[in-house]
Every structure is written in C-alpha cells, then in structure tokens.
Length: 60
Image (cartoon, rainbow, N blue to C red; front, top):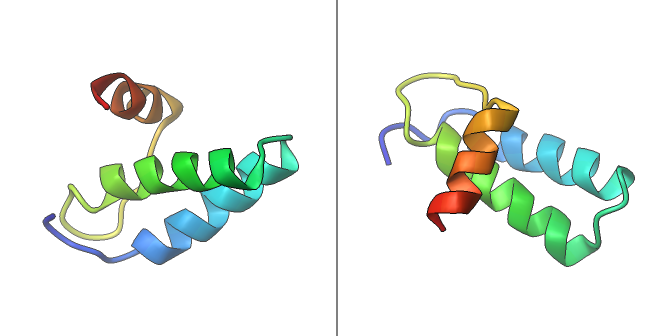
C-alpha cells in the first residue's frame, strides 16, 4: 500500500456500478475490493482501468 487517497471513493463508485449492472451484493463487493487494491498501489489520487481490474482478478 502506497497511498489510500481515493480508496473509499473507488469502493463506493465501483460497488454501485457493479450492483446496478446486475452483480450480487457479494460480487459487487469483490469487484470493489479489487479496484481499491489497484488504487492503493499508486501514489496520489488514481483511477483503475477495466484492464487493470481484470488483471487484479487474474492474479488473485
């Protein structure tokens, strides 16, 4: 973890988007957690791309 700036915002945004797109609450939480994991690996405010999110799931 390098910087937690924006991690909470990422969780809320990705969780909401995932759930509204049809994911269960559990799956939406999983996706949001992976997205936040990508974001905290950078310094400063960051975003996560779909490719980075997929890569995060592939790595486990």
